[in-house]
Amino acid sequence: MLAISTDMAALCASIGRFLARFPVTADWFTRSEGRGVQIRVDGKSVYAYTGGVEFDGTQPLVVFLHGAQNDHSVWILQSRYFAHHGHAVLALDLPGHGRSEGAPLPTIEALGRWLVATLDAVGIADALLVGHSMGSLIALETAGVAPDRVRGIALVGTAFPMKVSDALLAAARDDEPRAFDMINFWSHSTVSARPGSPAPGFSIFNQSRRLMERQKPGVLAVDFSACNAWQGGFERADALRCPALFVLAARDAMTQPRFARALIDRAASAAALAGVAAPSVVEIPDCGHQIMAEAPDALRDALRIFLGVARPATLAR
Image (tube, rainbow, N blue to C red):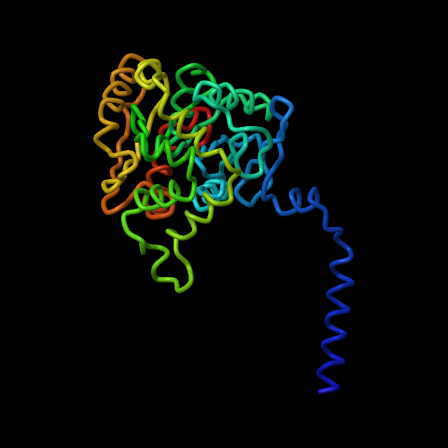
């Protein structure tokens, strides 16, 4: 026992000397691990996950936009894939969400302006935008008002109008835990969806609930009010000048696929006028609103194929 203890002490001392060579500061961790960057936008710090690699602004940029009461972490699988396959990635925490400072912005229009300001702060001319739920509205708003800044949009779990029931709006305002229960139930096709169910101790259903609990109080009511009030969907779709992808889930109870059909038709008409590819539509069977978690491979493949359409022609293929 004494010999084992002596060997263990020597090993620990050796590990300690090695770690001492690398001072553990937030700045060092961010730069060395490539896990994320802090961006100053309108005087506030904005967090963006870079997919596990150092951000390289010379590569084509994909910006991931999360939905209500979420943060960048919902895009972990997709953002890491594209960051390791020839793209720069920014999976953003919206204002007041996750690690980003400030209060949540109250309108989709304000979030669109903020996104353009974020691209300005990073020094990027244009990007492909991937948005889920509320994030899809932000992507559509930005593409409509700033077409020169957007190479393509992928709208995941989208609908327009994105109305929120009075009961859910009231719960978001007055009883957040109840609202979380309602959202979680309606956002998943089952409580034991893959890939969570084959792995004991891991559940995407419970993980989604914990993520919502992690956000600041009051964020949900602001997010849902912004979605519920936005009326610009058809106007922005009519103004599209870039390729578009719609990824829908057959069992989505939050944004039912039938409520995206009119938006798809408007985007198709706009594409014909602009001379760009017609919108691509992928509907994933047996999947709920949390597409990124329930069907990560199907979503990745849809995005991968779409990036071949939206990628600038000047890049090597």
